[in-house]
Image (cartoon, rainbow, N blue to C red; front, side, top):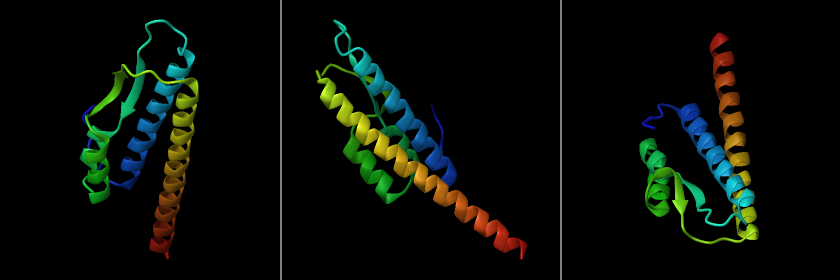
Length: 116
């Protein structure tokens, strides 16, 4: 996936897509917690944060480590660990959705002011 966001809506849309992909990976981990030989999956946002060009996104990208959308991880985690990750991921999505709502509201206001 080689996508370079060009504006705030594109950035938020990409972040929400990545959070959704991570939610799917965590759900799969929970569903297969007792499956012998199952390898845990996770989503790493680094590669995509690197394309967004803001100091905060660059700092996050440096802290998150190597890139890749869905990665297999050999680590063993309990269902409680996965549920905690799912809850954190849900909170990230809620914040991203709130930011998207705010951005759309700002755009609507700018359009309406421009009509006056």
